[in-house]
Length: 111
Ligand SMILES: [Zn+2]
Image (tube, rainbow, N blue to C red; front, side, top):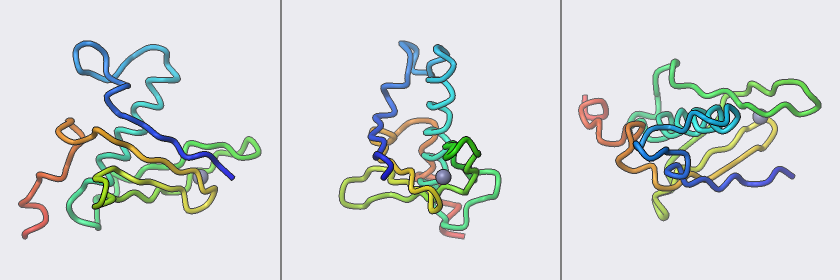
């Protein structure tokens, strides 16, 4: 069973409030979680294809590449995500108000 990634996105910010650049692995991970926040907080379940996030795990050294499913847990207000194939999963907190928070794009959901 895969572990659950518990992520506080603000831990990936540098002192300027931007995504950390070093080390490169952390930067990659930060971009991955940021992309999941965009996808999960998008007000319309039919988010644009460019917001899709591909699983970054490599079970048996083969890239999984399956589309990650993400949504908002309305009880905790955290972003929850899971890979339907390899079951890699996680929870992201403190995403509210970040530049990846799409939940305030009201016009997208009302039209
Ligand atoms: Zn996967």
